[in-house]
Image (cartoon, rainbow, N blue to C red; front, side, top):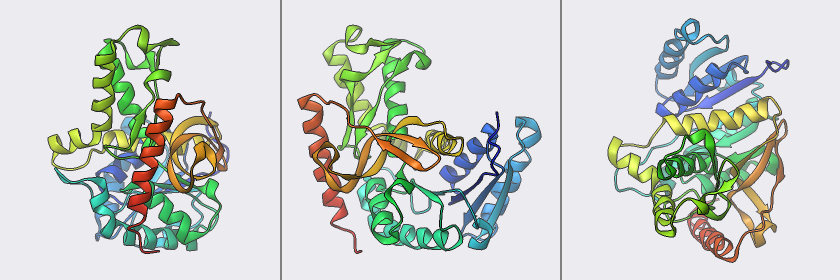
Length: 314
């Protein structure tokens, strides 16, 4: 059933991730309009036209519009997705992108809010937890309306690795990654992962589960090494799932980067934790009862995020 409210989504950045995000949102057919914005002349317009020419083939009615740096076209967007900035190259960490991407994210978020003051912002640009924190610090909008995407993507990669190890269909597997969206900061919750409600620890050895954990944590770096740049299909799909839950008020649970104020013993940072996503953005932060090992890993991850945050010039 389509959402009765007219739903407008803006995606800033017409690169591979932004275009993939726009495509998946359109194919799910819940939004009235998707606007793609980019600074490169004609690039967003070209991506939008190409995607619109798939509408009759993929059976969607969402209108996709491209614009070159004209934020008036994004006016009254319900949800805005920031993918802009430079992607990783092989051998780079997400943290190395901070110098360039911080300026871009700060500028983009400010311009989006001028045209859409009530919008919900989803941050994809890396280093993602720090960029999400930057949007909190520089915009001043309520914390429920700023969401970092990373955990949803990391969890999808975790489920892929679990299914691979179990030789099971991915639809049979459930699992979650919390913590920072970085190679060292991710905390795959092995103890809570299941295959059709049965704990995966019943099926896999500790050694194999350790391999799943490590493969998950370097999931993005593995792809960057193979592709020569950051991945785009799974990141785009992850964003579209968050947008869908918000737009249609599904109240689904995703791990996302949220501003914490005492939850998990952490404050004044954004980091991946399970949240309920609905029409107001983050409807609720869920505090899991973590075992001591996972809690220690989350605390360690938070220290890494804070270290990256300290590099920001606010």
